[in-house]
Image (cartoon, rainbow, N blue to C red; front, top):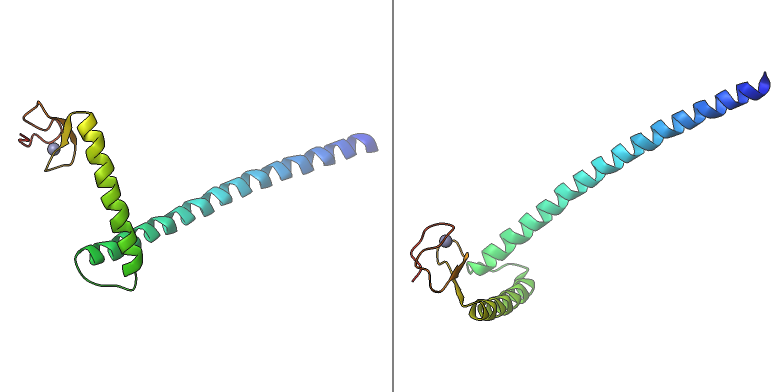
Length: 113
Ligand SMILES: [Zn+2]
């Protein structure tokens, strides 16, 4: 019967389309994973440029690095305020937050006060 043949064919097309959708989803997630790898490299490149700047080696990105430095200074000021409000300090070794009334860092064991 033609009708059932049509239904079968329609069903088959749907199955193929379903496979395509799965394949496309797979490929898209692979593409996104590859794009994430590139982003990781962008971050690494940026870190290297900034490390060179911070170490006093000039680069073509000095202005951008100077802006990062300013932001870092702001973050340090804000962090200091937060620590002050929490009555805490920073571990000189690992940078963890340590309560002012404790003598050792709970993370790395360094003597704090
Ligand atoms: Zn520590």
